[in-house]
Image: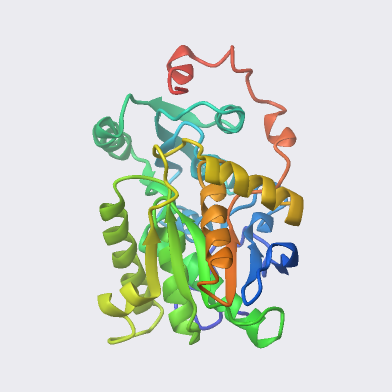
Amino acid sequence: MPYDAALPVSSESERTRLGRFPTPVEHVGALDRPGSELWVKRDDLTHGGYGGNKVRKLEYVLAAARAKGFERVVTVGAAGSHHVLATTYFANQIGLRVEAVLVPQPRTTHVVEVLRAGVGLGLRCFPVTSWGAVPFVLAQRVAAGAAYIPVGGSSVLGSMGYVGAGLELAAQVRQGDLPEPDVCVVALGSGGTAAGLAAGFAAAGLATRVVGVCVSVPPWALRLLSLWLARACARRAGLRSPEASFGAMRRRLAIDTRFLGRGYGYSTSDGDAAAADARAAAGLVLDPTYTAKAFAAALWQVRSRRSRRVLYWHTLSSAPMEPLLEDAPSLDSLEPRLRRLLL
């Protein structure tokens, strides 16, 4: 029986199969401490062309847009948004065009490559100067006939992809691929991944708690959104109170704000050190916006011996960027309005 057979939204009519699952789990023994182990869930390997955590969400939200007869989708993200690039990459495969309202982001080589790759794949960009300007432009695009996909793909429907991921991990625990984790550490930007995992672990009967490492602001709003999504996903997965209550989700899902630093897109010294450790010990490549901060939090869990078994959920695609950049414009040939997004 497939790992997600228990999901009420797992029928082919409600899901476009894009990824390859299950993704592997690995023990990073070099970073263990006495009494505390570090494991990694390799969701960087969800797809050979462009992996990462967005694939699981897009299987549901893109299927819904196509089922409703839309020819275009519109979404939101920062200039170097992995979600925007992933949406463009996979929507192209099923005949949907993509628009995105983009906000500024601190410039790094990776951010520039992601923006260039999206444009090269046919992304139609609508740059704005701040998040406050997003709703007006977004409303215009929806009024023009595009289906709206929330930032990060973090709707209830999209987050159900990570309910399925929670069930997938439970199946791996049962078959002996890894011991049941005490805590699962994952980057939290829009909240959908962490929320879906919390609901999925509950549905699977795991005691594993989720720690969402906050990489954006404001943390209080992200906490409320994440808890709301977790409760909604738990109910959609068939759970009822008390398992699907806000109280139950608060016990399952915590938000760690200590590794945020200056804010979204800005690197931190803890993140830089964690990225070096991840590359040396596990061959993982991290980005400063999301995964470096999350891995730093996972290392803190291990080194402080707060948990016996720590699972870091790796959400950044490890697929090579070169094929995505073959038809991409150079930085200098990007429209000035796009270059101004790079702070």
